[in-house]
Length: 270
Image (cartoon, rainbow, N blue to C red):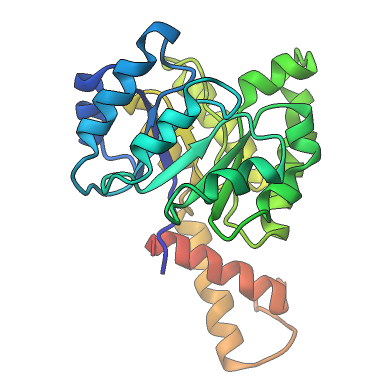
């Protein structure tokens, strides 16, 4: 069974020492970023450094290539997709299913993760999520989306967040991770934001500093109380099929049991 990833640590591709530290930081996935984190005059160096790093097999290292309409994207895909150390590609600023299909045809069946960062991408979320069997996930790029929409208050993104969550579910994908929390010192704000994201239906979160990882993992893993409740529900369902009420008064049916089973699976991280 595919593990439930909760932490996605982004690192700039033109900083090999930082990438090396990130690989030892304990994130579920390290994302080497060739796009937003790299200045135009360092794109070629970042690609070459990443190619050297990923020439050997590695576990859970993804690359965020440059946007497909830029002059660097074709070289990113041609150079990096064949490498044994690349276990997934994150595609920024995807706006159509055709964008994904074009990459899938060049990417040797690598898992693809589409980042939706514009109003058009949000409108086409389901089409993108279901465009190709290589699509393993979709997610928001909130900084770009905020600028595109002119949103000033964080709550103004909640509709877009829910739309992406629903589109991922409708396409049979795992729930998307939240976008990054940009203030690496604001761990209380990160925890509160993660709690809100979890309530919306996100699973896990992108990070930009290792200190954010334990906060994210703690926020998205089930609590002991949630695990105990899920175990009680599953045990009751095993004793008696169909709808029923627990001694606590909680009504359970097939949907409640399925949710409890997901909680226990996540608690085991398998």
